[in-house]
Amino acid sequence: MKDDLGALSVVLNIASEGSGPLMGATFAVKENIDVAGQVSTNGHPQWAATHPAAHANAPVVDRLLAAGARLVGKTHMDEMAYSLLGANPHFGTPINPAAQNRHPGGSSSGSAVAVAAGLVSFALGTDTAGSCRAPAAFCGIFGFRSSHGAIPIDGVIPLAPSLDVIGWFARDLDRMVDVGDVLLPADSDDGEFREAVLLSDAFHGVETEFAASAAPAIDQLKSTAWREGRLDEEFFKTALAHFRNLQAHEAWTSHGGWIAAHHPTFGKGVEERLAIASKVTLEQKRAAEAFGAEARKRIDAMLGDDGFIVSPTTPFRAPLLADSDEQLDAKRYQMMRLFLIASYFGLPQIALPLPTSDAPVGLSFIGRRGSDRKLLAFARRFCAKMKAR
Image (cartoon, rainbow, N blue to C red):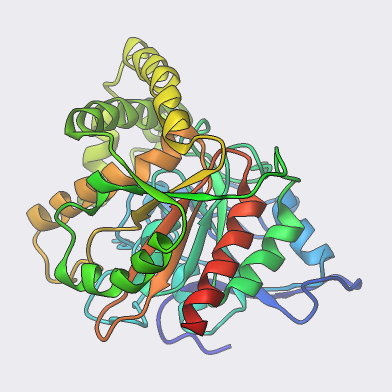
């Protein structure tokens, strides 16, 4: 397999002898997901040098192999899965096939690029704070973040365990649903989505290109039951502060001991985030958990019994590779505001690519926790209606 875009870290050829619903499909997995006999690098060469090869596949890999899919590689990622851009100072930045002068998004960068470039049928990533949703939007493909706890994450290097989930990418929704059928448990209820909740805060200040590309989809949603929802700026500001503390405390709990023992060198952004993480207190983490428990009631009320939230996946196209650190920090902040809704409250989210004449943008649907299959099925029906217009 020829990879001119720097997506793959290892080329493999692993298949089971059985057959199943994914027979004939190929896939790759992010470098923090274990494959027997391979060292999971976690996006850092010193991590790879200080950890042994995996003794077994992560269960999620075995389930895909048992369903007939063939594993053809592992994919590059941001250091320690603690970034949203896709840049890696050690292994390089995978090239975004949809916009080569722009970032591919991360931290599941290589998985998204491998799918967007047609190297694989689908690819696994992980998502803690947007790590599947950002690259899906930036590379112009479908991306899914599952409900927290829906898919076992055994054999996956943790970042923040109360937020970490498995996600995946594909170029079409039939494949997205096929993978979900293999990996996801039954939904927690049998009801249908009947009401779109357009999160008005999320659409403020979007790029002109996003607004133009999203208009037909929004019109289609407004042709059925819909309403506006609002969280207000104070909510986002407070929620983001608590969310960052929760993620940071858990990240340091996961990796602080290794960092203290080996003194690895990190890229600028990851280095700064880990330095902050080392100082977040247990009291701050508990405050974040308490805020999350109370704020969940507000999100549940917004969703109601049969609603789903509609939001830009990101409010802009992928940042340019030439953007300054200050510009990238500002865009990361804007993304985190939107990503925390699903991440903080353990909700499933699907990112849908929108047609553009330039770099891609994406629209997202967010459902109640445990509505993963329903969300994928709804997205497939919605996109079929859009094609038929």
